[in-house]
Image 1 (cartoon, rainbow, N blue to C red):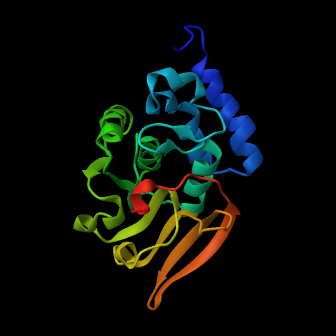
Image 2 (cartoon, rainbow, N blue to C red; image 1 turned 90 degrees about the vertical axis):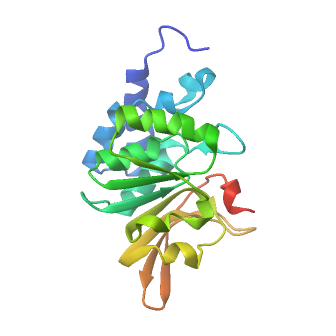
Length: 215
């Protein structure tokens, strides 16, 4: 139950100053968006006061709302520009998709979990109505609207499939957290080249595995 006097506005400011800025998140537009976008509507009703904590928040079926610091750094790593076509895989409750849409990109939000989609569609319809919500299998991507300038996978996976690489445009890239068994998770940029992809590690990141990619 949410305390009636809980200050969500102050919680957002604390998130910016105590989590994002110390982690070298400096993208002005990104910070402006996260300072006002109400993340508390992307969690369950009894979790609202936790929405701005520096944790991954458990939702349904082993799915999580990614912690703000890692999510912001992934967006910054993607180097998003206005008008780019972006596919968000594992759109969940809509927070990441809304951020990217408000940055001016053309966003396709892919989700296969119906319980998460109900929340995500409602959130995006209210706060980022240009997001195009797509229901489908996460591992398949969304080839109907290829080719994408970037694909952002909101969660940890073990490998990047050729199926997703083939949905990128010539100079496109995939942003995700990659973690093989026994390794430490890293945020990576997987850039498409003629021979396949080149993967560049960026920062350590601890996001839960996306169960849909573990099948």
